[in-house]
Amino acid sequence: MAAPEKLYPRTGDNQTIYLKNVISNPNIEIGDYTMYNDFVNAPAAFEKNNVLYHYPINGDHLNIGKFCSIACGAKFLFNSANHKMDSLSTYPFPLFFEEWGLDRKDVADSWDNKGDITVGNDVWIGYEAVILAGVTVGDGAIIGARAVVTKDVPPYAIVGGVPAKLIKKRFSEETIASLLEIQWWNWSKEKIAENIAAIKSGSLEHLK
Ligand SMILES: CC(C)(COP(=O)(O)OP(=O)(O)OC[C@H]1O[C@@H](n2cnc3c(N)ncnc32)[C@H](O)[C@@H]1OP(=O)(O)O)[C@@H](O)C(=O)NCCC(=O)NCCS
Image (cartoon, rainbow, N blue to C red; front, side):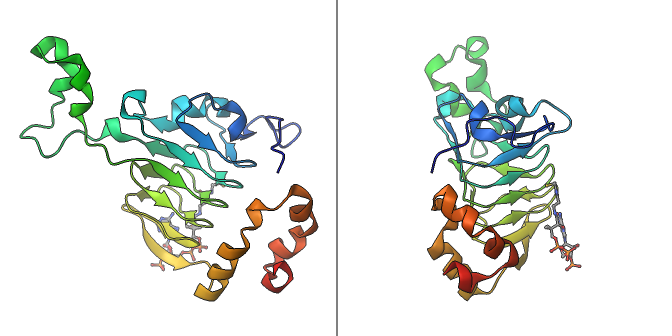
């Protein structure tokens, strides 16, 4: 599928962008058509304002699939935020290696590395939601406004709250299985365009 090259999907709306087109960090990957809206800060500053504590030394990745909708102020909190907890102190001594005569190369010992953040396709992330390191969000999930997501979210689940808990599933297990098999987000642009009415109306039979 040819990715859109333009930055703004909507003429006259400079608050909504195709996120992929502003990413320069090689540890961040964003799928085609995934969009971000920000009415507080410049949406193009997503890497700086929304992907936090994400330092190259950890080698941790943010992977977001296609056709996701990311609301203003959603944040991805990476591993340098996780002060080490199996130590007798959470104070990050290795970070201040000069002060304490420690080796610069051990700086990442200051924090626990819980891994990457992976978000599937067609995920809607609500206003000011926070997703923590190590979390995987399945295809079609919805993250409620201001949720703090600490655990994996199954496909097509709706979660909310602090910590985020399952509110409900969007569809029956049978329908979810069909959608995961169909993976409409991997179709060509032409095929998606032909099927928008069916996608919008929830006509699974038509998609099959
Ligand atoms: C999560 C969400 C999608 C659920 O919508 P819904 O299915 O219509 O939910 P309902 O209003 O029927 O609420 C269902 C339950 O979830 C709870 N709930 C809803 N949203 C919640 C949230 N963000 N955090 C915590 N709990 C939430 C409700 O209190 C209710 O609880 P109850 O069953 O104990 O009474 C919606 O509430 C939400 O947060 N949307 C995000 C909006 C947003 O941020 N948009 C940004 C612009 S794109």
